[in-house]
Length: 167
Image (cartoon, rainbow, N blue to C red; front, top):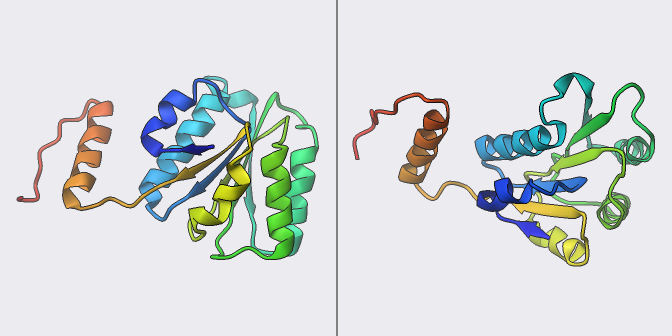
C-alpha cells in the first residue's frame, strides 16, 4: 500500500510492521521516521530497543533478515531502522526485500529508508502487501512550500513564526 506523507498521521492509528520510505527531502523523511517510531513506541521509550542497520553489502541484508526473525532480547518493543544508500537493488537484496514485504516481521517495527531508489521499483511488490507500506516523500515544490512547512513545525512547538525572507 502506498501512503502519502500527509496521510501518515491518520494511517498510524493502525500501525503496520514494515515501512519503506523513499525520498531525498531529509527533513520530511526524518519526520516520517520519527512519527512512525513514536506511534509504535507510544510513551514507553524505556521499554524499546532501537537498532540502526546500514544496508550496503549482501551480508548486511542477511543480517537484517536474521534480526527480523529473532525475538527482542530485553524489551517489549523493537525498532529496526535500516538505511539503504544505493540507487539500485541487486538480485539478492531484491529477494530479501520481497520476502520482508510479503511477510513483515512480527516482533519488530522495520523502517527502511532508501532515499536513492525510485518508488516505481517497489510499487509492484506493495500491490498485494497488507501489512507493509511504501511512503514516497516528494521534495518541496518551492520556497513558499518550505516556508509553510517551517511555519507549521514551529507552530506545533508554540513558537511564533515571522518570515524573514521577503516574498
